[in-house]
Image (cartoon, rainbow, N blue to C red):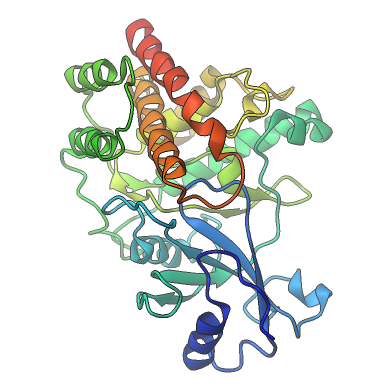
Length: 353
């Protein structure tokens, strides 16, 4: 009898495709579990039951444990869950200083497991999402880990997109204007209730649009719980590339600054790492990025306000999927309560600069 698969993953279909495309990779029946914490694309750890426990925690293609990514169940916004783009950017960045998993297989045949998906190597490491998780590290290690996050972001933005085959990965010209319009459309597609202030924030961002920094490969959701840290607090992998493109790199910095603002949210479904002792201030992160990258960060308030808006829209989309019963995992019942808070922070940041 085959192991019971989590929702959204057909283990028999996956095994058949792996045997066809990568013969000899899998030796026994597959079992899988959903990685909790993701609120958009679904991520599974898939294990070959014939592999030993020691092998399963190793690194590399033949150690019996892999990661599978697929779009969410149900309500899916156009272009928001493109497996090919994720697969392409991770594959391209693997030879660069940016730490990413090695990719194995892209499958766009929805008949295999109900949606396009890709498979990549399993990389050991810890994603830190809350102040409580960071507390055992102590202030000095926490500070070093977050500053290392900035340094890795600088490395990403220094990648020569043309040289790694990503020269056509996006259209930098008019990037910020398109981003605003895109998230406005995503908001409209997920509207199911009144959200005071969100249209005001959208319009205000449009009126204050800054001139873009020199283009770079942009992650789109860069934060501490989207990277894995090893026992030495070194980043072993940057994950969740679903929003990556070629565009204005300061959108990544603005998001990182947004997540470094302390929010007192008990049992929060979003990152609260900024509350940990030793976590650098927003100003420190901006200064370090500016010094190491040489980029002008004087308009960072706009980029931070845009990050608040973008996250409000994303969270509202997730809340909408939750109301439709199309989410997998825990914590979705609290997502909707955060949206007004993010809207207010965006308005305040833009007004106060």
